[in-house]
Image 1 (cartoon, rainbow, N blue to C red):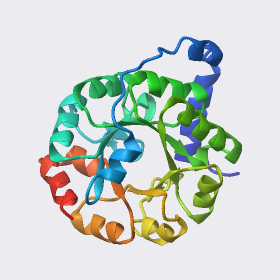
Image 2: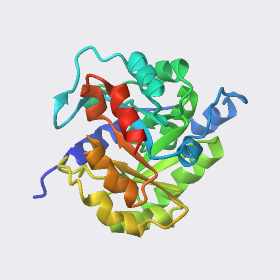
Image 3: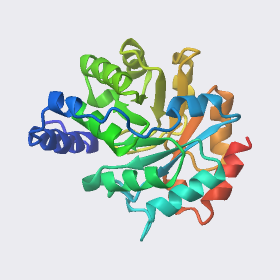
Length: 261
């Protein structure tokens, strides 16, 4: 019998939640405000910023490490990230497993001008609609959680709503799927979502599989300048950093150091 993984249990939770959601997507789209206050494109901000772009994450806890910081203030932390020069901000909205909330994203979006990623387990088109309403500029789509048909549909729907999509892959095979589905921005997560173990060489190995013209992001296991430097040299446009910034006594300085690579 196959052992249930972290990813399996998280996806079961989110799919069960979606099944209880009685909202009609057609009705939601018909009622979508014609003008929603928007900020710069998430992807454009990364492409247009000089040096290595930092996507600074707001995360209270993780399934593998538990609580990362007591009394975390999402708005205060987001403002520090912005002042340090972060290109974008990632906000966990998963409550059950990561201690985040949709309200966290809404509050952060209202407090900063930096583009915001809704970091969650997207398993339904209404999840993408909700991200738009919250004020997110980008949605995370995980190849391991979606079939290629779903992934293609979700990328197209993001485009329709004026959202960017960060398509997360873990290996060469998943990068191929992401490209076939039409991904314009691919994140290589060095954390295996099935075991939650980090392999800090994963992004370097997979980088060559991502063609020029696709925005490349490295995720997880990046703590210091020495971790980030080889990723920049390998052609990554940005890095997503969560735990190290959340636990840092001076996250602004860490962002500045990484930006100066």
